[in-house]
Length: 564
Image (cartoon, rainbow, N blue to C red):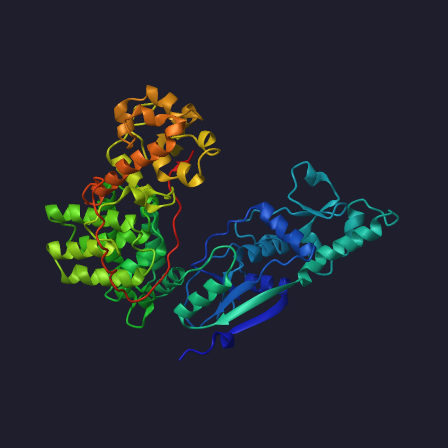
């Protein structure tokens, strides 16, 4: 039984120089899950200014463990090898590294000195320009911080005589800079050999900067058991990003865990039964499965990049299925899997119950085949909706660019090679020309409708269309009745614009929205394999949502194209 978390946490107040010395001596190391140092020189300056003024600068979070956790080369030269197991720095890398660079300039691993200076006249910390470096009263902070430094000598070296009216005050200011060494900082140390427990604790403690997830810790644990693991996994993530399909670690690890024969709870990858050989085999299967799935999503589903997905977890089922079938689908299965992808996106299938749903779907992939498999997968993706009930125009009311439907309209526009309204060339998801970047445009410009109609109407999906940035600027704030006169009818039809010119005047705006919602609803119905809405369709009773094991919330994603 786990002991209460409070018994594993130690908190202390220590002078800033203490953890800095520990970092320099290798008593504190940077775990491999940490990102590289990313702070700018101005961030370093602001940190010292906060310490000088006594402002809080946050806590350091350390992890004490008997586990063999891989660590990365720090951005400082750690000249002394510690004889005891090191502490792992989970939060505070940017702050602690910055302090070390200024406190011991020679410790900077790349050899490039950070020139931070203190202006005794204004009490400001300065990243000096070439001209400012000639100012003797801009004194290097690294010099002021050294133990035993004589402040009066620093002023005299700067040409300030003891009789100067500000000599005494400036000496006090230099003393305050030196006292930064003694400034207290909170150090929290958590002791545990349980990766899952550590992930939960540090996710809650770490409120600023980069939140560490269970996936980060699982990657680190895998690397501890498989020597080339971290390098191999990072290389594959780079490969995915290069083709526009960078996926977060959580989704990839869920797939890996399922392929390893456990469950979608990827924390099980670091169970006692998973040695380095088993992890390597599971990862190789994961790479193979993801390559097949990405090719399917791009080629068959017309999804140009992972940012367009409503959830990265949408990739898991196609990856499992294609890996199980060695990349081969029957002709009718390809269309059914595509329908599942669109349905899972449309109804935010993975917004809740992520791991429970993936476990159930993995069992279906193993146990069922043909029509029986896809019928059940699709039914589950529809959630509480009936699989035969078409999207109603009312379903598009009060839906905005943040809604999953928006991404499906984007995919549909790309798939039908919809052309830009001004250039008559197909809109391109990844154009070389920056002026051809896709933006979403308010058909009735915001400036013309916001004073007359409510936001839930003029900012809704039925008033949005995809055009290039150049075209967006050309249209500007003109009404459709004016600018659509010069656009070919087929261009407008490609984006579900009603063909009745009478609906393009300002006083007919509500009617325009109603007519366009009808057209857009049927565009979605075609994508989802549903019958058209005819105006006479009666909504069917909804199915009971399928039961799953556990509820795990997932963050919502932001829209992809740029707003006009």
